[in-house]
Image: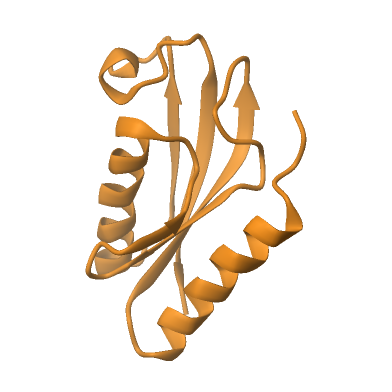
Length: 111
């Protein structure tokens, strides 16, 4: 699988930086590992602000919704976390990775 393009990374990281500079609480989610069929490559980012606005993508569908929900908790509490989604997970069908893939996403607070 290829890495996320530089343009995608710069856009998302730039948005996260701008939101943070504007005084918003921000979290950054990063795909750190993939296995099998995964919708986004390692290095893909999703920036989320405290109001639930987001830029970028780490997966799609319900996985993205779950990552956004966790990012909001990280903004509130500050503790980073590693999320894993995959077909072996009981929630795989619910969050949209029933294609047989698995991803790990690291979520951390910015600023």
